[in-house]
Length: 245
Image (cartoon, rainbow, N blue to C red; front, side, top):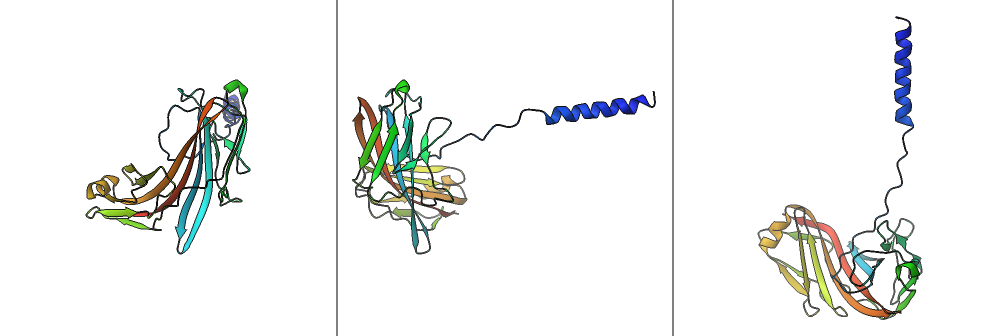
């Protein structure tokens, strides 16, 4: 028995290790689209958003272009369905696992989509899901780019004024301030180019680092083969160099 027991233990160990190494391999990471802040839009069969974002580093202002498109089962549904595929200004869109078509900058394409004055959507039809072919070339340009400092200090003991200079070409402006504990969000008319963050507003954000986005946006609704689609153009100024104290 003394000679058999070690052998049985060895077989037991080998069997255990074998079970651990022959399990199913992990699947690929899910494809997720980045979150885009935009106005609430209802009663449409899809939403197509073109985004041009400004960031600053010293005296240099950099623009990056992104975009997203979603298509719904119907104008009264929030269930996202597949189209046949899509491009935005010639860039092929990636489809997320929950049927959002998007394009974001990469290391080899750091500026993303270069818009100029043209926004050209090309969406392939998917008859089974009721998505028609879309070819929409908007040459009307974006709303004016808001002006935002590279860095901001928000002091809980002081009112902070945010002034973005211009909202020309937009329907409205969305202001988003994120802190460690909360997010301040407000939508104002294009005639407004400044707001005050009160001491109470800043206190809710918490102490630490934050982000500020000023978004001038315009929404145009168009009908394609009897379907209603919202085309959104956003000019965004963004900084994550925000200190809240």
